[in-house]
Length: 352
Picture 1: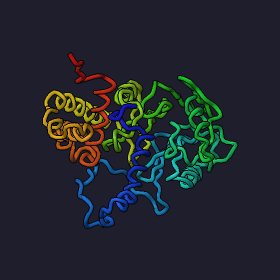
Picture 2: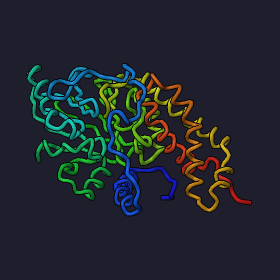
Picture 3: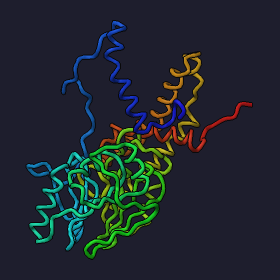
Picture 4: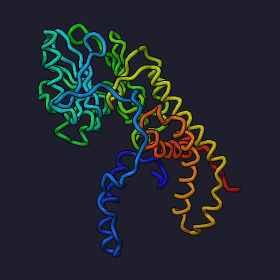
């Protein structure tokens, strides 16, 4: 990976480790550290649009609701999971540890209300990340776990007892039939991770695709920390080719619609257009003239100027439309900028 390539989770952790070393470095240098944060010193951001907010959680910290027919979703307002009740048991889709034991509580609640079994018999992994399946071990050893083949490979290498490897794997497609219900699983290439799956519920007008599109919110830091930026930009087009009315994105407190996804796609396209315009407009010369042989300083300042040029109009356009547009649009713009430069070669010049 080049020094300016798009950060993935591993580089993000490395960056966090570097930040953690700052106190020791400051002590050695005799520097003065900033005072501990307080509410009065933290920055202010734009209010969250009401359209980005979902239903309130209950006293136990979760909300469970019907998506369509016997398909339900659970959220703690930050993470999401889903489950399908059948005559033969429950099929669970992801197990975020932040929801944890509330997953079974939500299942018990719905099962009791509808007089159906509450035993989880199958657990489908959207992808291998711990924040989405770190509660898998709560459901014991007798649950049939299902995931894309690379999920098994990645989980085997990570050896996390909280995330048992899938028992059933597939390479490109798999049809899950349980208790008279059908769910179609598919892999359409790398996007957020190498193993991220499209989970389609044809009888329930629903698509689940995690960590790609977060309805009415901008992506998390650095474009959701996507491992494949071009693949992640293309993923919504693949998603829109499916027939669905309801969307489960894995994060935040509401479901999505096709109209929501269209807004998100336009947001990303606006960033791409802004980046290309910025690369053609912002002159790097002053930065390299100022910093001379300190190439990193010149690069940092130049790329920061490109990001500001590209992201400024996007932030202004989407304030009040997408939640946290003023929080993470700049870091998402940087991730897309670096992908446009490095993956697509846009703006590259060959020395004469």
